[in-house]
Image 1: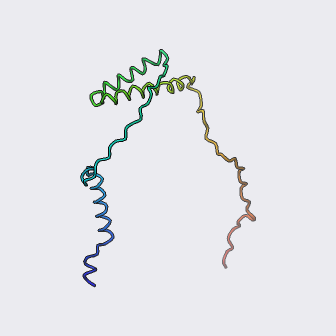
Image 2: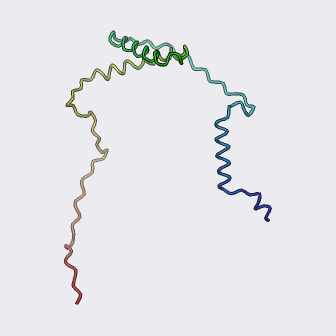
Image 3: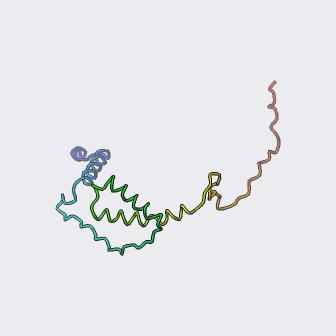
Length: 138
């Protein structure tokens, strides 16, 4: 019976070992265990989005792309640069729509938070009798 006690590990030790194994498994390369690495799924070819940008928007898109390329261009592949151009072009029309709203400094927020259910205020509870002075002991 003592041999069974010696071979058993505590819950704390078990949890520590499980944590160490899971951390090691998450840090190890995928092909370490002999399994073939999972091939990346090919991205479906998307038709190039044809967006007609206004003459004011096109220089802004070009400036945004050039700014990003100046900062991170050496780290980006050609596919990433193409994605950058596509994303910058697709992001411009929503920006133009937001900028179309005329806002002044004194304007309040467009949305006020209101409860979904309007409830009546509860009346204040009425006291049956006001508390009087405590009786004196004689």
